[in-house]
Image 1: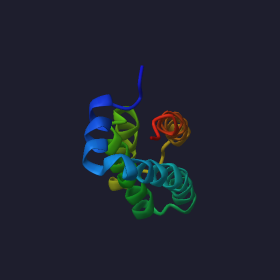
Image 2: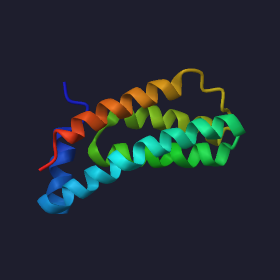
Image 3: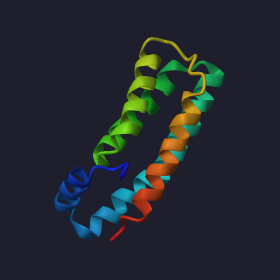
Length: 111
């Protein structure tokens, strides 16, 4: 089962074109690990604004591709950050694994 909505990806490809879709994919592949690392660092320094901002960006980026499970995880973390609750338990590890899985799938979708 695909982690990325085929319909959403097709719409994105239609809007961006074949040439730019790889750039959009590459931006996600570059940014996602940085966002997860920033969220981890924010937990360590109790920087709720940085945590919330990176979770929000992850949610938006995942939604762009229709990676709904990843977006839902990021949405939950964003809400926790907004509430000032950085007791995330293992949620960041789950988020990291979901990012890795989505990234692998996206790499195979390059044109």
